[in-house]
Length: 588
Image (cartoon, rainbow, N blue to C red; front, top):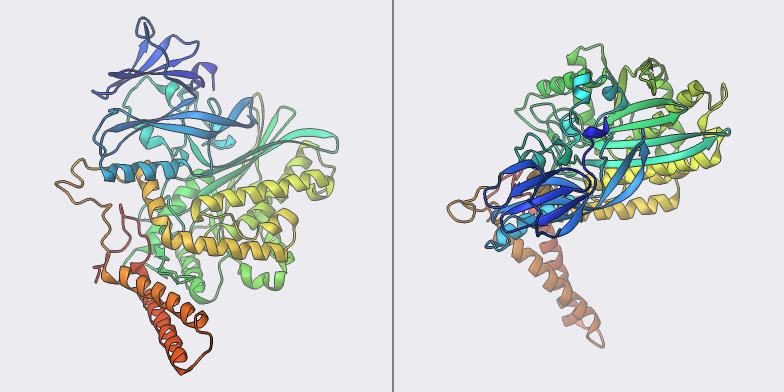
């Protein structure tokens, strides 16, 4: 991308009664955003800033969003250096501000709730950006750009699947502000300068989370009618060495048909197919899009092949057969069964099955001058039930195998030498980065770090890792049942899936008002009282008698009855999304 199309990276923000004025340092143009008329325009700098002092410095314009009270300007205020890719700096968003257009607007309680949702979404770890490098596009897609596309602004040529603030940036409706629009990518970026066999090169990972069917773990599963799947993530492994660039892309995403697994206070709700839906149409739409973007597909399914997951696995296998597309191959591998009793070495059975296709797919390889050596002709699309823990383990193994082939091709590794044997220092970096990638992808979807990262970090399963997995599983349980409703609402609000109506809470009912029945209050209250009385009955008397024993039995029974009632009516105690509730029920 030419420097003349770079997004501005250092700006002064002036706030007046009528306007927000953004002044890029060292430039001769201004972005003027009307606070009253909401008109956005780019003007040549002349006398607009006379007698004005900047309110603050900012490092990016993230967009504008309409809430109940007024519109709000979103700006990036702080950033953290991540590294350099293709001579372009990559940053991580470290601070932002949400500034009202009308500072003294009447603040309704619903508006504060929407602001809280917005902050929760923007606080998600982590958003990344670059003022020059297109983080949304793989190297191979960038190479395929036409000359006309290369001359466009960063947002205009970005892959909109991975631009998380595309909706709020589009609200400006201003044709000449390309250099003010800063695209954000949610995912993970790690850039490392490493050395093997005395050769120094850059090894990087870029993970991009899709905005299509974005959501939280139990509220967003499967595919929609358009073939967009939950938790779709593209991960690209890059190597830069002696003026050469390579790229290896993998994808993950929920099984591409209509299924759900809604929370109900059970530790592991039973996943089930959505009745009355055209599963084959959704699967076909998904793979048609994937084939167009990535080429051939190997769908690696790591779910259990028995029980509830087994029903989904057999459905997926049947749908791929019915597709009848030779460019889509289905590979099932029951991760938990094959690797039971910590036999994780059995994962090599799967990798060996995929070896032939990995060699056929190859990797993208080009020189600085644009000369193309090879392209990647297909991808491995991996999933488990969440597309998190098991998926990341397999993706890291495929990435290591690809990296060995890349470094041998570049002459960094000797013939027959494998990357894990060449440098213990790099092997430690490799494992750490892929484990960090697992944690971030999991945190964004489930609310906690990934499970099984002890294997990714150390190459073996440990008891400490198993205990840590237990802790994360319990935290996931709490978040998925009692906190993810608001998080799902924040995502839908930020992405523009839900547009606020000015009449909410007045002429129209507010979606933020939760309808709760008597059970929601009665059962927990009875449970708390019963627990308290049971403890008092056990600890207060100096000696036990028949009366105390009867009291204990009574309050113990009340604990059992209230706890059973809570579990039986579990869906009434879950925190559901309020903007797009997945189910509707009449509170008793």
